[in-house]
Length: 154
Image (cartoon, rainbow, N blue to C red; front, side, top):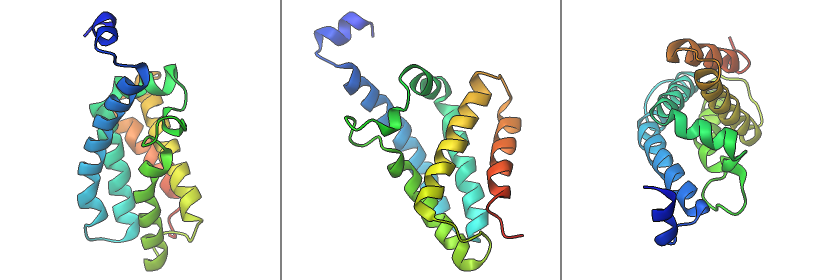
């Protein structure tokens, strides 16, 4: 639809952003659910969750790139209730706690580290794919290996 159609229908820019990010959120949560509830160590499931995040980003790559670059930190805007980074980072918090409990991940502050993971992998991956034109495998491996290196116990 064109801008005029949105205007005639009374759709605001914030409503449009919320709807688009809502679609990304649905895709991400649906893909992440089996990983969160799956088997394996905390470290294995964390890697799988980060892979899911990158795969989801690929499905919505240019939308996310536009959101990150054109509007700034969309996920932390207080006026868009459901788009906080905490909502996206929460699954990673649980995986970090699981990994600390089973000894496969260092014991770190889970809430803060989950937020760092979400932002580092999410923004880093999207930036490498869109601005640096890296292929998905190289970008995913590079970002995930870097962040996991700082978390693994061995």
